[in-house]
Amino acid sequence: MKKRISLGFTLVELLVVIAIIGILVGLLLPAVQAAREAARRMQCSNNVKQLGLAFHNYEGTFKRLPPSRINVTSPVVFQVSWPSMVLPFVEATNMYNQYQSGTTWYAPINDPTTTQKLAVMLCPSAPSDRLVPSSNLYKALTNNVRSDLPNWGYADYGSVNAVRNAAFVVAGLTPLPSGTKEVFGALGRGPDGVKVASITDGLSNTAIVGEDAGRPGMYVSGKATTNPRTGNIAFGTPTTADGWGWADINAGFSVDGANSKGLQNDTSGSGATSLAAGGTCFINCTNDSEVYAFHTGGSNFVFADGSVHFISASISPAALVALYTRDFGDITSDF
Image 1: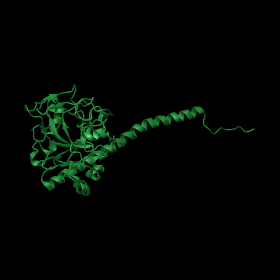
Image 2: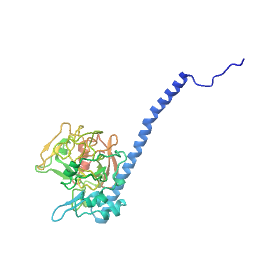
Image 3: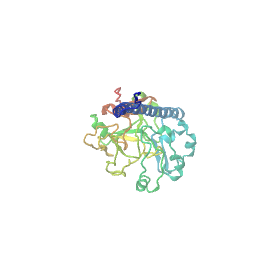
C-alpha cells in the first residue's frame, strides 16, 4: 500500500507565513509613505520655484516686484492680490484677463476666475479636501456681501508682507522704535511694488514667499482644530480668519510668531506687544497667518533671487527675522 504524501501547509506553517508577510508589510509601508512624501515635497518645491520665476518675469516687465496686494477703496474700489498679478507668468493669461480688478476680490462677478484652482498654488502634501466655512463666516469675511459658499481656489503659499515688533521681541532682538508696528518684507503691501535695488539686505538673503497651507481649515501643530486666536472672525471655529483663496488680498502674512498651541503673539498699531507663553515658534505651529507646511520639520520658501530653500522649523527666530526683512541690515546665512 502506497503512503499518501500531503502537499498542503500545516496551520503552523500558514501562520508563520502570514506573520512574515505582516512583518514585511510593516517594514515596507513606512518606506513607501516616506518616498511618497519626498515626491510631494519635491513637487511643492517645484511650485515655489515656478512662483519665484513668475516674480522675476513680472519684475522684468514692470521693473518692480509685485506688491503683496493692492487694496484701494477710494475714489474707486480696486482689489488684487499678488497671485492675481502674476497670472500671465504662470500660464494663466486668460484668467488674468477675466479677473475684474475694479471691484472686491470676493465679488460674485469674479467667481468664474477666483473659484478656479491653480496647480502652482497647491502643495500636494496639504489635504486635498478642504473645509467649507459657514455662511456666517463668509458674511463676516466679505462685509456682508456674501453668505453663499463659493469654493475659492485654495492658496498654500503666502507672501511675507511684514515682520512685526512682537517677532523682534521674542527673537531677543532690539524692539522696533516706539510707535512702529512692523517693518516690511520684500513685497510690502503696495500699491506700487518694490524695486529690486531696494532689497539692500541682498536678494539671496530675503525670503518673499513661504508656505501657509491647509487654509481655510485651521491647523495647529499638525492637527485640525478650532481657531484659538481671540479677536478675529474665526475664533472658536475650525477656520482660519483669512487666506481662503489665492485671490484673497489677505492671503499673505505679517509675522508675529506663535506657540505650539497656536496662540499667537500680538502687535498693536502703536507697536505695543502682547506675547503668548512660549511664543517663539515661527514655522509649523499655526496656519492662521503664519508659516505652516505639512512637511516634517520645516517649510519651503522662495527667495528674492528666485532660489528655493527648505528652512527648518528649528531655525533661530533671530535668523528667520533677518531673512524676512529686506533692508534692515540684519543679514544671516543660518538657513
